[in-house]
Image (cartoon, rainbow, N blue to C red; front, side):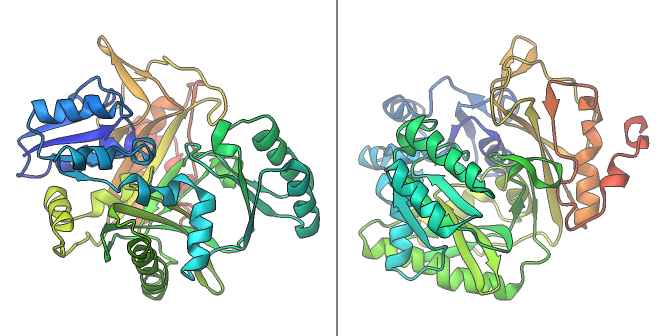
Amino acid sequence: MNILVVGRGGREHSIIMKLTESNLVANLYAAPGNGGMREQATCVPIDEMNTQGLIAFAKAKAIDLTIVGPENPLNAGIANAFLAAGLRIFAPTKEAALLEGSKQFAKQFMDKYDIPTAAYRTFTDVEEAKAYIESQGVPIVIKADGLAAGKGVIVATTKQEAFAAVEEMLVEKAFAEAGATIVMEEFLQGKEFTLMAFIHNDQVYPMVPARDHKRAFDNDQGPNTGGMGAFAPVPDVTQEDLDYACEHILQKTVNGLMEEGRPFTGILYAGLMKTENGPKVIEFNTRFGDPETQVVLPLLKNDLVQVVLDVIDGVDPQLEWEQKACVGVVIAASGYPGEYEKGLELPVLPDTKAMIVHAGTKEVGERIVTTGGRVLVSAAIAATLDEAAFAAYEPLHVFENRKDFFYRTDIASQELKHKQIVHNKEVGNK
């Protein structure tokens, strides 16, 4: 088969890595791809938002299957356009993708179909929003309604922080139209985890749970990011938690979408909080998560191409998972998620057992330089989380003296105490 992956980030590189394991692949393309994908796929310079360009390419190269990574083309209707052109695509329509495209829609949808989530209100007026904060108190969660690349969420622990977030979104227009409406939610107590699933209409095929680290710095300090690392599976998430989430969240969601005339085919991502009253939805995404994909897909035993074909055809893919652990650590440009420098040259990484997944990079001659805030993910599989974390951190000593890059040193360490082991200087001398 000729397969096209749409996107340029770490998630798409992980998808491509998994696709290369399949005997069903003849030619693999990435549009537009990044600096790390060239060994596994042919990168073509078509922007992920250039739907007509992608359709023309798919027809010219006789593409049998297109897989879409990022959220923006989904909400712009790439699936609708491909289906109308008679092309097979694994992605939800824009009508189904609205579940991620509008947080206000998602909250109203969850209310309607009795899907457990935090209490909320929506606002477009600054003074009304501030009055609500006064009445509710803090901590409180403030979200831009639309797509904001994972950055439109602020967990305010003081009234000053909450007021500043409202001003930033509604007055300063930090997220442009995405923040023209804001959603305020009660702060849920508990531990977060992610549950992704392959979906076709009312069929749900869950993956192993993962947990990402959203704050920029160690010990969950600093601003929210798109994710600074992740691990899977999650030791404190029980089978009971997963069964509850599948029945009361994933299944209710896809049933509700069918009832609304928004049938879903693709990946549904549920960002969940494990509360005293069971898992509750923090957010929905309508595609593979990033960086969760980088630690979940490596644990999938199945051929990913066959899984996608089965799901599209309404056949149970019979998912099988490695009884192992995977840890991924994000290397980011200094300043991320705020302003950061682009065009930084990456150091040469040592030979490693870790999987080096490229995110914000491009090839310039013989060099690989940065194009985004999150640059690489170093991910590793092992028998235990501890061993996987050690292996993921092992090649990162090359960044220790670089002031222009940073990474968290505590990914998965709330479950482990590997930090002292990982940063033992012997690592750099191996």
